[in-house]
Amino acid sequence: MKTHPLRLKPGADLKKEIEAYVKAQNIKAGWIATCAGSLTHYNIRFANQPNGSSGDGHFEIVSLVGTVSTNGSHLHLSISDSTGKTIGGHLLDSNVVYTTAEIVLQEDDAFEFTREKDGSTPWKELQIKNRNQ
Image 1 (cartoon, rainbow, N blue to C red):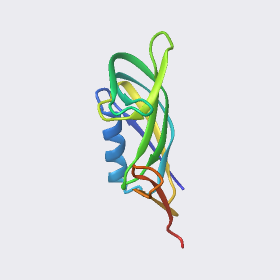
Image 2: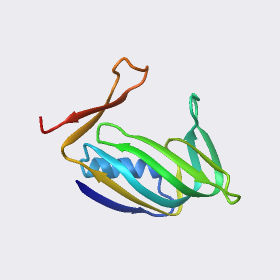
Image 3: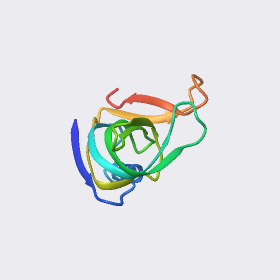
Image 4: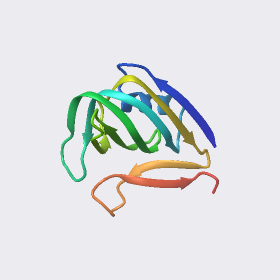
């Protein structure tokens, strides 16, 4: 396993920067180990909704989870506002970092993650390939 710590600075797009890093590091099977930070704009898709929801303000990142790969990623974000109200959903583009996003990614070279339609749902779902077989 390999660990990748990174810090995003103010104004960075959370999803685009993670995906760019994954591509630059050629990560084939990775996941978010942890993330702490804040946003001034969020854009997430709530469960079973066709479109994203967005808002402006000051939000704490309370959770970022999911899988990452050069073949596609699947990330979920939870954020809280100044009153502690927390929302979460599927991470879309245009989540803008406020002060920082401190992220730790991990990868395992023994696997390769892809996203393919397998007939179990209408969407491209995670497929796990063991690279040592």
